[in-house]
Amino acid sequence: MKIEIINLLILIVSLFLLTSCKTEKMTLEPVDSLDINKFMGDWYVVGVIPNFIEKGAKNGLESYRLNDKGNVEITYTLQKNGKNKKMSAKGFIQNEENTIWKVQFIWPIKFPYYVIDLEKNYEYTVIGLPNRKYVWIMSRDPQISDATYNQILARLDNKGYDISKIKRMEQNH
Image (cartoon, rainbow, N blue to C red; front, side, top):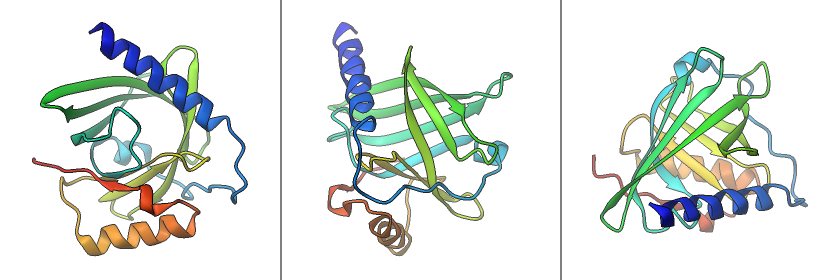
């Protein structure tokens, strides 16, 4: 338990430092808007630029629930080295379009979270950080077709991501 807390703190500090670095790339733009209620629920992580907790992980699942204050309760579960891991965070919506959030795993550190791709029927989404150090490709289903996945990668390449760093996350659901 103590090691997990230390790992979580290292992750948070790393994300904070990485998101505060300047980037020479074009500005990362979120999608135009999203229906926050439709966006809530479970999303399987099918592709990721992994942080140290996600390297070698599988069965990533990010769950969103809107609380009574209008913030998003986030639970991220995954399996690594045969063990289940669970992290909780809170998302603070930053714009009327619901596409830019600040996410906090531990007070007072918040990092930017942009919804940068969203399928019209909310079948898949892509979450990115403005510095492009991390990205999460998520689907409502545990599996996503190769054609759809490759189309998403092409759009991420156009947005300035180094797609060679994106790894498919195994889903055994």
